[in-house]
Image (cartoon, rainbow, N blue to C red; front, side, top):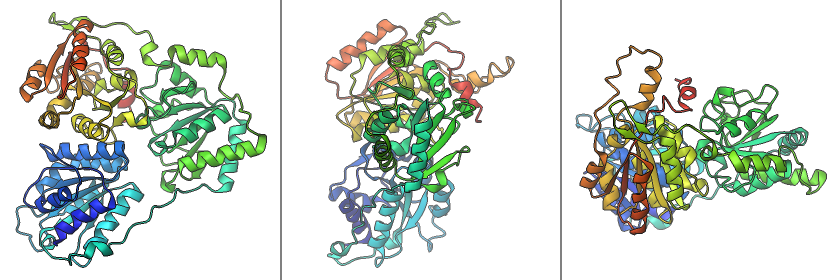
Length: 558
């Protein structure tokens, strides 16, 4: 068998999830080898969309995903998606054909190693037939165990080299690395802080996904409230003392309670400017602790009082055992009380927070719907078993805060690179990872039009995806950032003519719906009842919000 065939078969044997890509001459053989070995392959319309589909699929499935691209231009087309995955520590392998060192005159020749490193990915290579299987296993281990995005270069001259037919039987099987357990001294130090705290709050991030049960038990024992970063939204769904997302998307009550904490413990969470509102959610007397299995992450974004090196689940379990050893199983009241439980039940969500309704005619006399009213009504209409994906823009707080999700596997937030246009690919990848849930995308008109070629992919795959376009006919973040600061500013570069996105969607084979009022959303219930096998695109003509509540805070970091 050839090296290309061996690479595909080896990755299938190692247990990768799905592969996404755009096939050209350089990656044709390896992609077909994957398909022949049983790895599902999704042909996207653009490498950028394929990269984000693969990223989302890995996040939601828990398996290493693959992206297959042509040499040179195929890789450059995918670079933004690869950068997002790398910054998010997504276990992803990019199978990148390569012109090779001896093909310097090829139109496709470029420094693919440098490109990969420039966006934070790890660059690896299949060097020869003799090392091919070891090279593939090394890339897989780096992706799976290091939670890294790996660009595995496949030089064209090496792809055609041959291996013995039984070579795969001698392929080394990488062992599963056990979780990093914290030092006993660190567990004792954190237990001391928890026992002394009166108002402890846990903020769980990406590194805490999968450790929900351990953190819930520890929080109940220590009297702690529970919050998440945006990427871990849903981790504590249904928990009586959960606050939702910490940061710019926080409800007023959540922000009040987090800011009043005397101990903030970040579990697998960077506690960065987004999650802590540039420090505004950290009280002046609060002690700060960070738990992470990567040493370099401890204290990377802010000063901390204690850093604990360890896996989140293992650390939470050891902490619970230490607290019970000290004083039995009786929980401390801490921040929890019946009165607070009542407040949380009544008003912890934005849906329960009174806001003015901006719906009505705009300056041109066109009726528009308040994005909060839109989001709240969709939350009521859509099934609870959903998987929500978010594009980037002024609108993004609305679907993030208003659309409930059943757990951390119901929310996919590809925002580490802060690029618009990743939403549609995110939603497709997430949907394929969790076909048991209704996929929902919140996107702006700018991001949707940037990625609209992948709407055909969703139609072709018969994905019943609800695409909610918060349509303000503009790059809204820029309008609301620059307009108020300078009333004379020329916004012509970021404002566009209104587009009938519902009509465009119908042209792709999706259902298109224009929404200007709550009554227009009744058609969503009809669509759900029809047993849909194609996307629904809701072109929601939203009222101007003057800049969403989180936008001003977000732009402080620019």
